[in-house]
Amino acid sequence: MALTASPKNNQKTWIELSRKNLRHNLEVFRRLCGPATPIWTVKANAYGHDAVLIAKEIEKMYPPLGSARGSARAAKSKKYLGYWFGVDSIDEAVSLRREGIAAPIIVLGWVPYPRLKELVKFNLRLLVSSAQTVKQLSQLKNKNKIRVHIKIDTGTTRQGVLPEQALAMAHMLRAAGAVIEGAAMHFANIEDVDNPTYGDLQIERFTHTVSLLQASGFALPVVHAACSAAIMTRPETVLTAARIGIGLYGLNPSALVAARYKKQKRGAALKPVLAWRSRIALLKQIPPGTPVGYGLTEQTARRTMVAIVPVGYADGYDRSLSSRAYVLIRGKKCRVMGRVCMNMMIVDATPVADAAENDMVTLIGFDGKRQIAADDLAAAAGTINYEIVARLAEHIKRIVV
Image 1 (cartoon, rainbow, N blue to C red):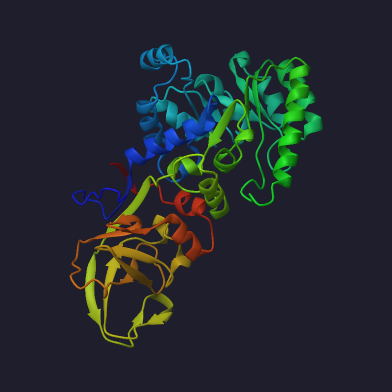
Image 2: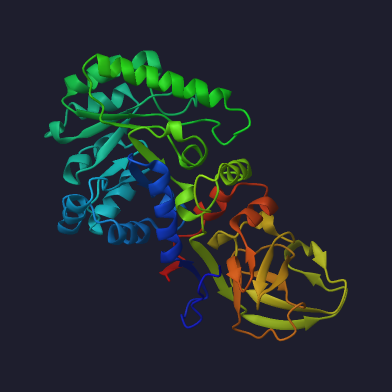
């Protein structure tokens, strides 16, 4: 379904966020997670969608527990458990709080030691991986107000303590005065649905470690392992919480996950939330044999109508898309010509006989029945859809439609 354009705005490039599609995806994951407490992840500026805007939209749809609306909804439905936001940095967390976001927020990334005190000031949770971080927490005032989750490295070799170190970490945290609220892990290869062996090993290590911690007196009411791919294809990985990343925005974690999810018929298809638009700033017709753009990497093979679009790699349209990607103008595919510049690109608008300056150009999204998907740009750039949307420049105005 086409996303609604905003032709009356005065931006040279802008991003549209579909409220309807966001709600749809939320409901899909609500049903997939069942009675689990979901953690809606808005890290990396909500994968380029704008963390504050997305968080505010979610709070409108699902009022946080403790608020009047949230409490009323919880009273009507025993299944209403609210939601959390997961962010990577302390800056993201503080920004959400200052914008009035009331839901629980957990910082999943590393926090510089002098800023750990902000966990108390802004009522934030922390994912803990390091003994040095625990030592720093022990020196804070009101440390008994800090709720932490132990990150267990079950085989991603990134954040986290090794399973055999988890119990010692838990005792350190207790001695430091922090409240141990949960435990977490991260899958390394869950998208490879045809080879579940490593995922099986990781979840086995994790559940064994959690059981050991609980048997040793650590309650751990919030235990989370599942990401979008795991939720979509492996429901047994949804424990007492879930972290929903790329799927929240209607993008599939991988082609394999999308195919398996469709085959399993566990839920409705996801819908993309984001569309990226610009305009034709200049049109001109040039003769055959004319070089196009920096480096003379391409020249016209025929008489060509070129459109100058005021978007470039400084906006997040990767230079690797030069001469490879397409945009949509009046519902027709038009190829990017020559090298993508810092703040503009050149497009072959010849297929659009009635093209005019100021026409809308779709870089990602629908125009009529045709679509340029983030996956299309990812394929052309030799990367993944995560990178395409996460690198969209923050200076581009986001509009909820």
